[in-house]
Length: 513
Image (cartoon, rainbow, N blue to C red):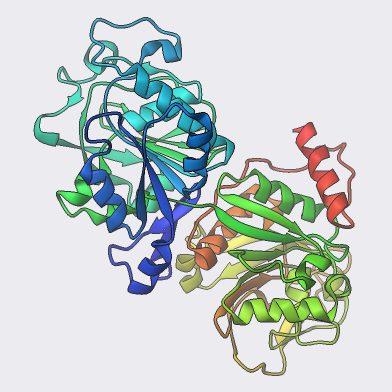
């Protein structure tokens, strides 16, 4: 049940469970979803409003205006945006002439929705497009449409997808897509009342669900927090009680803090900066020790503490900063630490000293190589992992062993080391048993807060980054998508030594890729 809250964020995330607790409802009610005026006498259909309300959000109708300042003000006041269904889009918007089969168009509405999207995209607001809304998203990002499926899409049934009385057909989701994750299954039945659909995909979009005849039913953007569905989830929810489609309601992006003062050093910190800043699902704040001491952890969904040196991170934040992190955790904060991010938590001098673990002292924490980590079956499910055994980068990582108990802290092992690595990155036959079987990944509750920390670097390889997505899902309720890149270019020689250097390194890396 740990995946009860999973987000559509674009990011954003929403409920994966039909049941929403009263506590979660109260939290979500603070989130405002803007429903873009359909430019009709009714403004916005009642079912759209009910759809948002049933998800525990506050529906806000963005009323049509041509005043750009007013549009910006309305969009800024919302946490996310929904584009509703309706008429065909004027084909000149995607550089085509009108087909004889083109339906009714509304040029005024096209211009209005473009103006809203201009502001929403600028502010990186999560967006859900429904039917026409999905088509508008695709067109706005440079894609095109089939103006009439029956006459333009080979293999489409003669009636196209405009089924009488909201008739239904099956769709199949692409494995590993956001949509599949939110739906919790690959095959489902949806309603169908459209004669147009996505043809050429817009910038950043990929198709993630299809009807049996190959028509694209769902698109999601890998660069921006947006998803479009060709069907009408608001009708499936309101008329048929299909509450699993509440999962599509867009939520704000994850607010992540990345600690990148002098103790967080090396290329791995730039990896983290690249992953978090490049994710369509994350708003990242780059923190130094002074920020932590001043209490700028408040409002974060998660604090990421990367590799480097634990004592260096402590020296950067000082005891005042360590106390702020303890306070943040005890008040319900979430923490993900890798390598030094685990070491700095340990119950030792010059540490945050909140985890009841110590380190094996000796050459095992000085090695570098491939660490084989076997995850507990419970945590394979908790993190939605594809395997239970991963080969993960290991470099100077701490090897944790049980230490003195800490009041209010409970701890369990998530994954264990299956091999040992010596100071040269090789197996040490003489003492390998002192590392094998020790915890590589730990989970802890600290009063109201939660920690997942590891002694290795899952951020270092594309094949292990689903672990990161799983950790974010488990701790924040929102599974994040990360930019695709496998490694640094050979000419990238940068090593981070503080926040300014991390930002310079990120800028240099982005120019190379």
